[in-house]
Image (tube, rainbow, N blue to C red; front, top):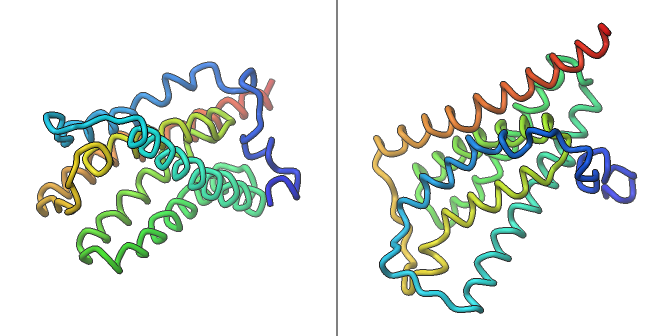
Length: 209
């Protein structure tokens, strides 16, 4: 669809590296901290590596990150921006609304997970969806978000792919979920909102000039 409508460059899929914001790598730091924290729950002592499993782990997480970013921060966010305009209110609404859609999409996990766990996933995805939107809007490319999304997914699935006989989902406590929500708020949502604000200030300064 993006190719059919000629949107691949506009949404940041085919935008050249030279057009990315010079500080794109620095802007990924808060989100990458989520991956780093997630890695602390990995059972490193029982990790077993093989070429086949390693390729499956990397490809699966990249495919998920690529698809979700193209769909949500690419298509959904871009369409909402075109509909509501690149004003302060329009960008904020587009970022929040696509994040809510991204969060609600995780309700599909109800068929194999308890309600409290899925509810937490909806909140996590919504919060990080705003962070990804801010990153995409600031860097003017989907690729920083795709890269970070892939790394976060890889960090969160180490046990599932690289530790044999790990099939059961270990649900955090209620307090644990609260802590995770605060972490996502601080490391994804707030930075994302700051990136959006910084981008708008830059545009305003250019227009004034």
